[in-house]
Image (cartoon, rainbow, N blue to C red; front, side, top):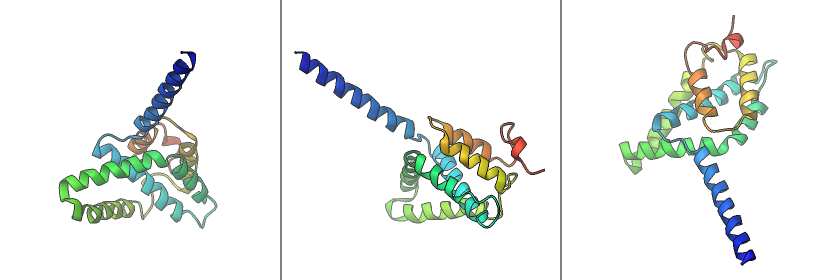
Length: 157
């Protein structure tokens, strides 16, 4: 009886832990998924733009990407499912490529208010943060055309 109880408690704990991780990583709406994907692409494009200067943050971006891989993949799956619903299975891959290229082109000329130094700081912070909503919150602030109170002090003067 004691062994049975221990096995049940262990399995229940494992299920809760596994379910909690999946719930944390899931981006529920297409808009939220698009925001998270845009954040990722903005940081990637910016890290490549800044690679030759004193504030190269490609390693910070790689750490960010690795640490948030589950959330980033969930956002991609949500976007793909939404585009499949809108355009059909055959056209969804092309539509996702088109959306992703548009996101990358948006930041090809640089971030609206952060320079390489500010982007390096932000990326390093995000790489070390965990928790549900971190990426979506950061996306809402960093993708805006004007700095939020949180990032105003990092904005170009």
